[in-house]
Length: 244
Image (cartoon, rainbow, N blue to C red; front, side):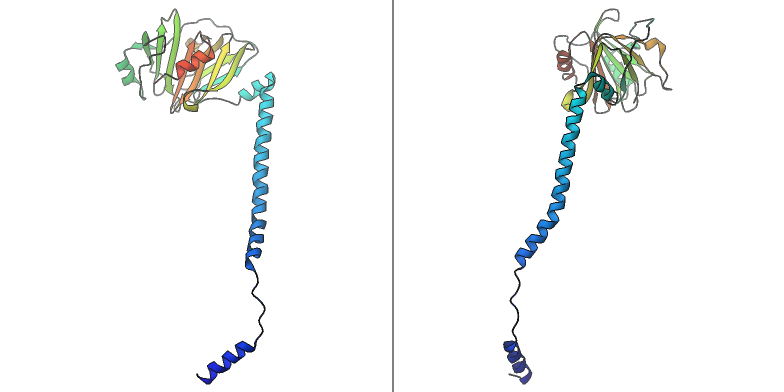
């Protein structure tokens, strides 16, 4: 054995080194310290969400507050406004546009049109197209224009963010609902309300102003759909969920 190696061995045996520290406890303590702030933030966030939910639920229980909150809820292509008094209406015609066949409707609009067949009603009696609406608008009518039973309309909500306007009086209720696959919508019911359509410049088309019965409006992908008739909410949702 070389002399240098022998001397180093003897030196190592002669030195008294302290025992190795227990690093496991140290590491565990540091991890716990780092996790605690995150836990506090997470608990605070959960508490804040819970408080917000309770506040919203409490506000929705008060009619005046519920009306104010609903003014902030909307669906693409349609808005509903609560007014103390409805404007006078000179006409009440449907003004649905041009009567067409299903094939003509499919050629006239920029979205896929499927012919609906509603439970208890079957296929629509007539189909109309409004070509003035960007992307086109299709109306399916059960009954006649003079005696309409049910009216279903479809249009590109992404191209017409504010096409339909509604004014509802104090006796009309506005309720947010979920329709197809949780799609957002509005159920407007009670006393008749005023409906009108806006043109490309955002101006009211006078010939479209009319009184409307109970109506369900909802979104589906790029489309906005509207179902009007003399039915209740449960029946409206049943019909809407069968629309292809």
